[in-house]
Amino acid sequence: MSMCKSITIAVGASLLISGCSWMPKIEWGKDEQVFVQPEPKIITVEKKVPLRIYQPPLPAEIDLLNVNFFVITEENLQEKIKEIEKILDGNFVVFALTPDGYEKMAENFQEVRRYVRQQKELILYYREATTETEGTTAEDWLQNNEE
Image (cartoon, rainbow, N blue to C red; front, side, top):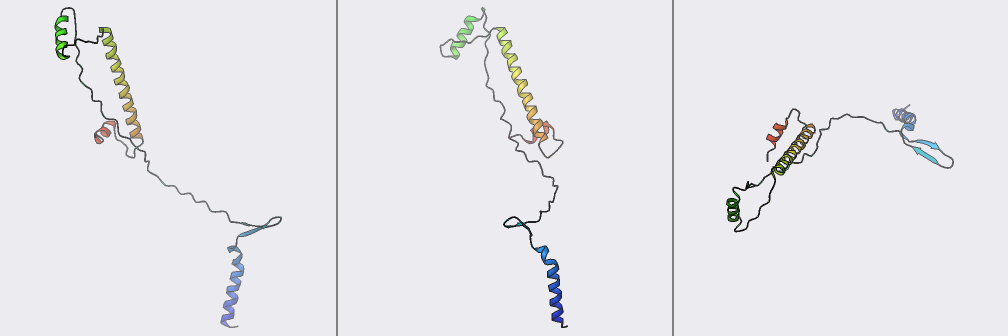
């Protein structure tokens, strides 16, 4: 046998043996043939993805205006009328609170202050819980993010 003939027989035999594995599987239905693709291999890859949550800036600090309070009694009524008329260019207008009303207003301001502080603590807690760096305290965060 010649060398060329033996190579041709070897290549032909290997194609004949492995040739069927290269073709899709054919299943015969009632009237037509269906090509069935082999099932894909499922590969599971575990990868640590860093947590990226938008951290909105804290609102600007409250900038309160000064309020002047006048304590008016029977003894200083005429003096305060003149003082207020001087401030208001001749008009005398006052808004009055009783001592009990003033105390209630002060308690309401304290309640608002408590509420704002608790909300701030919640915001700082969630900021710390959703950032990548661990061990940052609320004070550290505020110091690093002053704007």
